[in-house]
Amino acid sequence: MDGRYYNVTVTGDVQDIGFRKFIESAANSYHVRGYVFNDPDGSVKMLCGGC
Image 1: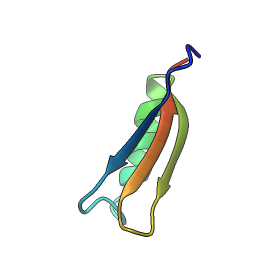
Image 2: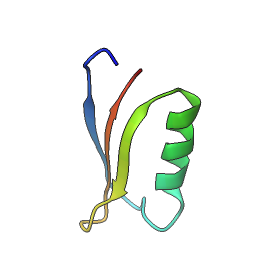
Image 3: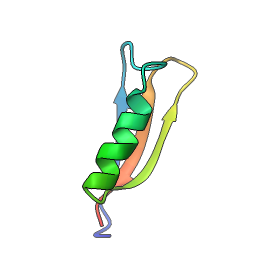
């Protein structure tokens, strides 16, 4: 990785609709590494970086 990482927060109606799984799939397609999780506040949070 080139050392650049990004914190991304997506708000709105994004839990319980498969959004996190969609993001994981899209990230794998583009060879992006990181973590995606549902936050208790209802948002989806990501820490990601390219490879």
